[in-house]
Image (cartoon, rainbow, N blue to C red):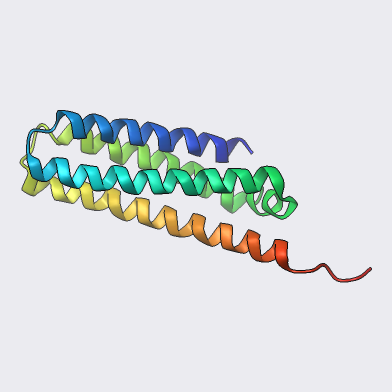
Length: 136
């Protein structure tokens, strides 16, 4: 599934952009908040890697992730995360830390929403894998 592995690439790109913000920021508050964002993105990356390993090992995972809605969600989320992280990077030099909170909040919310959705997919796949199939 190209979308899932492309999403993993998008996550790594977001992590790279946020690390760039962390290392170039001069304001301690911005550094601290960006560090938390990087930690959230790393947790999301681990969840995506779990989903990728399930995709490679489970037939039910392949069925669930080949769904059109799953593909559309991954494509949309990857683009949105990239766009929001680049916006955050571009704005962190231009505006004060107090006003940067709006950009950070949208990025945090989106990372959290994506993380919850991926958690639900992983739990669904694990439940389907443990459920015995009906006798033929």
